[in-house]
Structure formats: C-alpha cells, structure tokens
Length: 305
Image (cartoon, rainbow, N blue to C red):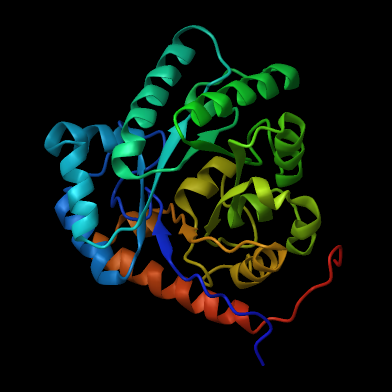
C-alpha cells in the first residue's frame, strides 16, 4: 500500500556531500578534488543539484571563473544550485566585515549560477561568534539581510541548530513568523530536527511551510557522539543507515506540504575517507531508497506523538 506519492525525486548534493576531504570550519573549506572530476561523479550517480560553500566557490572562481563553472554545470545536467554560508550577519567589527564580504561574493555569484536561495547561519561559536546577541537585534538583522537578498532577486534560509542561539525548528519558525519577510525562511534538516528534540509528527503544526526554503536529509546514531558539533560534522550517516528514521522525516515533511527537491547533507569522517565517486554513489542510492520507504509509511495525524 502506498500512503503518499513523492513525485519530486531530484536530489541536491550539498557542499559537504560531494567535496571529498573537506569539512566546516576547517581551513578554507575548499575541496581538494578538482571541479571537473567532482561534476563527472555527481552526474554519473544521478544527482540533479549541487551546493557550494563560499571558500570552495572562491577557489573554483579563481581557477576557471564563474561563467565557465555555469557552463560545466549545464554540461553535467545540474539543474539546481545552492550557496552557503553567511554567518555573523548581525555582528559588528571584523566579524561583520568578513560576513559582508562573503555576502557580497555569494550575492554576485548567484545570478550567474542560477541560484535563488542562500543558506545562512545562526550564532555559532565554531564560526567566531562570542555569544549574547539579543533576540531583537537578531530578528532585525535577519529582516535586513532578507530584504537585501530580495533586492538581489534572492532568498536567505536560516538553519536552526541545537548548539546555536536558535536551538529548535520551533524557535526558527517563531523567528521567521515574527520577521514576516517573504525573502527570509528556514532550512529544515533531519539531524537538527532530531537533535533539537522536535517530533516529526509535530512538523506540520510547527512549520510555516511558505517559509520552508530548504529541506535536507541525513541520519545519525541514536545518541550524540562527542559534542553536538563533533556529532554533526564527523558522525552523520547516509539516510537509512542510522537511528533517526529519515524515512519518517521525509514522510512527515511531505505530508506537511513540501514538494521541492531534496538536499542531502552528509558530513562525516567516513564519507570524507571515500573516493568522491564512491561516496556520492552510496549517498544517492541510500537517499532514493529512503524516499521509496517513505512512500509506504502510514500518515500520522497532526500533533500525534
């Protein structure tokens, strides 16, 4: 019996999924594998989208230029591109100057690469934040950032994380509702939902779907390994290979109204140790199997636990 039909099965490999031995907040975050090789591997594995982190994009731009990159993306059947990661957009001083430089670079690259959505971060010590930004300032700054994105024909999606000042998806939903900017929305990620303690069954009630801009799939062990930061950058698993029941997440957010493509964000030591071609093939196969499994799960009433 099929309880839902997931018609959009286009998968986007987020920046870490197809970068090889690269990780957040490590060095310049660029991939050690050349872009030609990487694009051949994702095309062969069936991916329809890719993501770039700023440091990696900057390196590629220096090597071949943005317009050549756009040509390569077209040549390899890449239909969807996402960019990240603007952090410290509420800050002052050097942190803000660095943030504004990343913002300017990503906003300039977006129209060339056909990008509509840019991921942005909440307050994270791993990206230099010292803590203590007020709720009022954070909301005002997010509104200003979203307005600036809108002027460039873009949207920004903030990513709630349990180790940030937006710990849960409910807190993120409250933020975007409060701000009410059509160009500011949310990243909804399996790992962050589960580690933040939100029940998948509650997502339809919690999420303002008109502000859900990005959905990302992944998996993990039932218990956190090391710190939350260690767990999220070293221990993620392919969908279906862990204990977070990614298929149930897919079913829940589909039932809540999501009909877009599926980002897949695997950040792990295990994936980084594999050849890129092998890694992206395994992730793609696991994710497609998870979508299949999600179709056969029964619907859960809103608010059920």
